[in-house]
Length: 107
Length: 122
Image 1 (cartoon, chains in turn yellow, orange):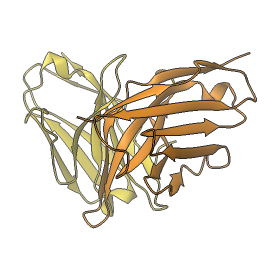
Image 2: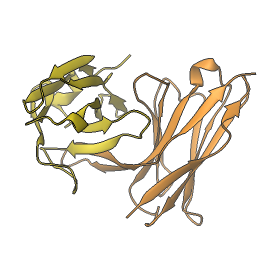
Image 3: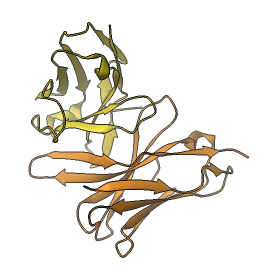
Image 4: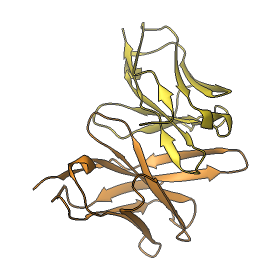
């Protein structure tokens, strides 16, 4: 079981904004990184640290962190954003843990 | 840019050892950390562990007794062995480069290999 908690499923209307959250005590000490995984594909990095996006990641994806909650926000969701989203961070024992994942449906 | 590719048997018998290799191209393995992550079909990701270019390792406590990650910098490869496998070890296995910035309190996995499905069955 994950020490990082995510909602199992979230939906958003096409073009609207959605926030996906990740909660855990370890997030008070270490930033989360976020990954998008589409069916049959490997995860890709969306952002890490204080909202640092790798090149090629659209700026409609953004991140934030407060206390024990890290958030991924998609501003103006597209149909292609329908995917699973996972957070990851370092836990108190210096190992790394993933959240259980959030399945995003774009309506 | 750096690319990773997993290779190894897709079928392993119960109680035997799972062995996978990740080949890194487009860059040197002699920096950063190199990680294994797995995902049972339809389930969440699980971090298995990582190795540094100098050979220091860090493993998931839940797998530590059965896992070994090694590195061969001359071949630009790193490997995973998992002993005494059961059906619960059936999963997609991914290798990934891991970058850790302790001072900035962040770490991330990028890029990832395409993954390889390993099934444990007799």
